[in-house]
Length: 490
Image (cartoon, rainbow, N blue to C red):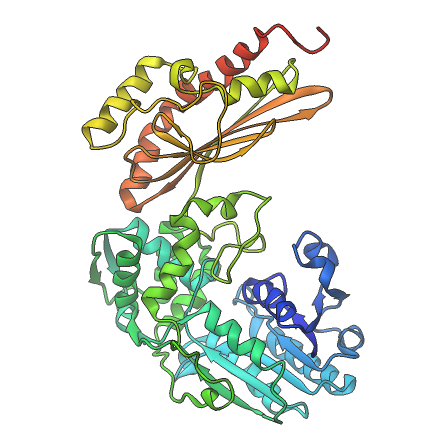
């Protein structure tokens, strides 16, 4: 067991590293500016928390006291003019504090490139790595290129560009070679260095088994996501600034984050050695291939467990799954129609109406529209509305309800239906109830995860009709509950 300190625990890698270290049997202390930011993490009760800024020598040393291995996962994305100077100052302060606290190793995750001079972002990463390697505390600097996993800024940019643009005009960096690595392999390397006793002070290139251009990765993503092959047309005149603005326009990735990523992509990022295998051997099945890494990153979105993206009750089960600490723009697009209505009926009465939805009871809004949608689905080879229900009053997980499937039932609280009609994406209908201020509150959410550009166009095309369909549904369903004999106070 090793006593570890993790910085950047609210970030992409740090938030995934902490539970991995805990599961490996290590003790973990997280250094954050504000402890509140970790309060709701599922592993918060298993760690120590130290509040400190990496540029504060005294508080950083106090946070490091008693730890053996320190993970430095703090990065500036170039949002300020002097971000590189801030990075150097924080790294130098942390290195000195680690020496004063008697830390035996610092582990740093940096960037991989053959020519860091081409990108201020990568140059700063290289400078931070050199600061740790030049300090008196032995350091391991892991250099990675594009990390493949839901929530990774590089992966999210790849995801959105490929999903939304069947035809792309791209800058020259689309032909730059890179060696992407799955987030699970990055974490495996990071965790391993908590237990390796050797006094190692050097950098290691880490990458997956595939060397690809960015264009290759777009085609690979499209194949894994079941999208048609993308048409890529390079435009040599697009500068990094124009490219980042273009990415910011097409995707929800902010331009301030897109720019350093784009600048980094201009230079080749291929491993020059694989010496790390001498300390952390490759797994028996080998490192994760790019296609498998993408499939793992898409797994929770492609399967019914997409709830990990939008349900606060769920916990990610793998490093490539979305996490609560990931940015709002990560995890792919998820359109939501959310409606709430307070109603003066007892919760059990409203629940009887919710659980009886579909089949003979119908969908409480424009029956003709639902019949037309069912007919269209059958014409497209879908199930339509002909399945009805197994039981008119009770539902269980796995039951069919017209062209929906029951994905989750929490009696008296939640019914979640997954659409099985023909759609350019995945859709859910979630009906739930709660209580507030002595009243029962009905909540209705329609969720849609689009598949490619057609999926986005589908949602935008039907959005004008949502009030007619979902608005009426909420009003009529709650009105039906009021007609039951046992109302609040009755």
